[in-house]
Length: 90
Length: 212
Image 1 (cartoon, rainbow over the protein chains, first blue to last red):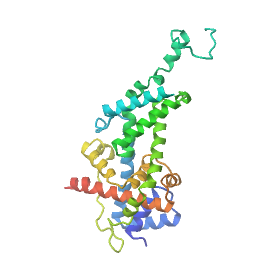
Image 2 (cartoon, rainbow over the protein chains, first blue to last red; image 1 turned 180 degrees about the vertical axis):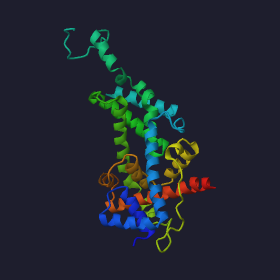
Image 3 (spheres, chains in turn orange, brown; image 1 turned 180 degrees about the horizontal axis):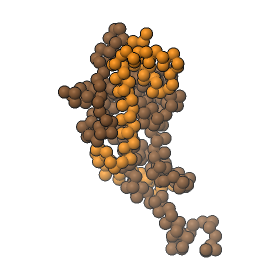
Image 4 (tube, chains in turn purple, orange; image 1 turned 90 degrees about the horizontal axis):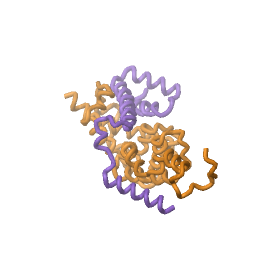
């Protein structure tokens, strides 16, 4: 029988590669009787979902934090200057 | 239409061909609009993956410099922004590759599992909560964003890079283990630890609070 530690490791692994038949069976058996690992599995899917959503929001000018994350004026100037030097240096 | 030989663009830009060249390539030959048009977008993309303003700025700068050198090879079959992002993405992966050599030692320590969530029988020491939230509406909350950012920022560097390659770049295990220079087995362990840490961090800072 798996304990919760082993079950949680398998749940994490299942996010990265297909489990073997034996692993799937024993995980399934554990999840049937353990609601905490069932919660953990849902949390893992939730985490993945939310991270990927967050990643795709970056495009956006949408998203609650997009205005906080932008190039400073200094960085902008520095980059432009570096680009000028590069094109002149050719 | 004109029979002028196209061997060398003349320095006289008043010719029709010179003008149209400048026009079609206006964006590409005007680096300053480049930065204004895409700078923030590229920066946000880098910031999400690096969690560090300075490094993210460096990556954006390197991207523009490389783009400048390579813009002759830009065929225009993708949008300019897509093209810039693909350069930036390579820059970031390269950065992960280089920096993973340096902070090996720091991260090995965090692999020993000192912050274990289980008791000696392998049962949950602190039971996972029921996260009753809709991911979509959660991301609209500024407070949650702040916490998510902080939790990601608290991961040891190499662990954070590994997690980013898996969950944001969605690369496969074999590719990631090559980039960060660890075995497939260790990769599983690192990803597991990252997920455990993030889960716990979100639970303490958000879900426990909201459950009242």
